[in-house]
Length: 281
Ligand code: X90
Image (cartoon, rainbow, N blue to C red):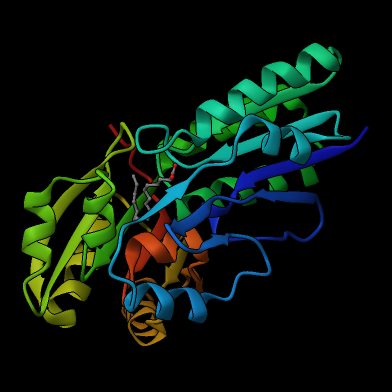
C-alpha cells in the first residue's frame, strides 16, 4: 500500500519528512519567459527579472496530466490545492482524480480544497502526515482533516497588490490603496477562499499589531503558526517575537515563499497560517 500526499506548489514546500510527498508545480510567465515552480526555481532571478519587466505576466495551474503524473503509483492519495475560488488548480486535480480512479478503481483519493494557500495548506499537509503516522484510516484522515480546516486561518500583509489585481484576483480599488507608499494592507482568506481585506496600517509596526489582533480575534491560543515571507525575514522574525511574548509555547515556523506565492505577494509580503480554537464561520 503506497500512501502519498500531493499538493500544488503554492503550499511553498517541495518535500516532507516521513511520508511520500509530491509537489505539482504552477508556472509563472511573461510573454518571453516561464518559471516552473519546482525545486529548481531561482527565486532571486525570477523576482529581479519581473521587477524589470514591464509587459504582462501571469500564472497557470497544473493541468490534469500534470496531476496524473504526480498521482502515479500510489494507492492512497491525499491531494491539497490552493483555493478553488481563485485558481483552476482544484478543478484539474479533481478531473485527474476521477481519471485515476477509472484506471485504478481500488485506489482511494481525496482532494482537499484548502480555500486558502501557502502556510494554511502546509498546516493541512502536516496534519495529514501526523494522522497517517498514528495509523489513521483513509476515512478517518479525510474526516479529521476536514474538521481541522475549520480551525485554521490565513492572514497576510502586502505592500503591493499589483500582480493580484492585474490577474483579476482582487479588485483594482483594493490594489489602489495598497499602492500608496508606506501603507500595508492586512487581509485574510474568506470562508469561501477569496481575498478579504481586513485593515490598513501605516508602516510595519502598525501591521504587526494588526496581525496579533487578528490571530487573537480568530481564537489563536498558542498552537502552530507557519509564516512564509518573500524576502522579508526581518518582519517574520519580529512577528515571531511578538507571538512568543503573548504565547510563550507557540510553535512558530518561518520559511520563504516559493515561486507562485512570491509572484503574488511580491517583495516584502508575509503570509501567516495558524491554528485557532474558534470555528471559522
Ligand atoms: O494561475 C493560477 O491558477 C493561480 C492563481 C492564484 C491566485 C491567488 C494567489 C494568492 C497567492 C496571496 C496571499 C494569500 C491569498 C489568500 C487566498 C484566499 C498568495
